Figure 1 (spheres, rainbow, N blue to C red):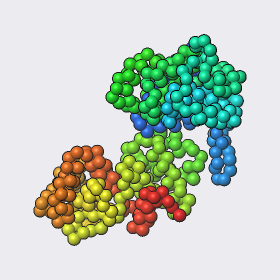
Figure 2: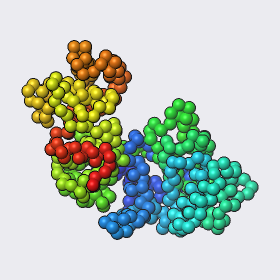
Figure 3: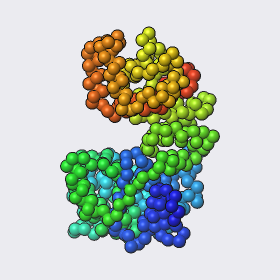
Figure 4: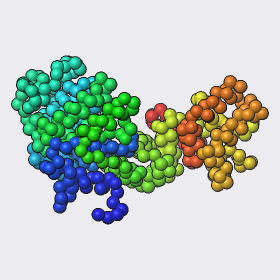
Length: 442
């Protein structure tokens, strides 16, 4: 394998294989095993699983017409298609909103049947049944365990339940995701016990997707203990920014942005943020702007950086004005972030507040991340700070500076190092800022 093969490509090849060799998820020797796909929050693990590995066929609306999400060739290369050819299910279960093991169990069987047969009515019926019953159902008795049938068999068509079990047995794949969103009502020991039992009883392959640091406190200790008993193999998902971006961008609807793709990627790379959900918001904002307004390289940069700053820090930078004391002032004041911006200590030396002035101070290395706090504190000294803020305001901001290192880093990053407010004309910037903040562009 070429040395420049990416982490994503290697992982995909290992899990799915190629024309010569079967991948891990298709090898019969791996039936009954549980694997874990972990990585940083936002790195795109779920997107990777659904779009690069599973590829369950879906109907989407594009340009006013309904069409399949993947081309037939793309679909045939996915795990869902490969398993369906063997009459085996590929099930994805999100733990988000689940309040009991029973609700998870129901989801597994429901989707296993629907995955092969495609019975939408069955899915609707089972969801309705569970909703009416609530979370406190009887004890779980899995197929082949104990003396009797599962509680699910008493609620649903038994033939369909049996079929669902067949689709999972000896080679079906069940993926569990969103562990950080599970209800606190679900005991972690019970959850992993249930997952382990599925693997053993059905000889299914189990995939667990979670963030590297999803569990805290007591749950972290429990997780450390149970994963050693439950998980057979670990995979670490660590794509580059370009890998993750290209994976998101592969959605056909973004082809309208092809002319600006490199500019969008460059701006994202400047932020060093690795987050699939943010990339989607950035691309959607660019797409909507292009549909209703003129788009160029400068607008792209403002849209990308402004969107990322807003998503991460809940701040939209307003256009600055020059005060009598040459402080960097903002029209909106939201403590403490905007107050800090209002005293951002640029030394413009007669250059005025402009992109050129900022570039000049950057070229002279006027600010570093570590020096910013000290320079702001100087501006808050009794001699200068009292001209803008009261004693109590000065005390508040100084206290905030001493206890909010991350927020100060973000201030330095988006307010100075990546300063983008001057990349477009004043009125254009104002409209972009309002669009990012409100989500509305008429």
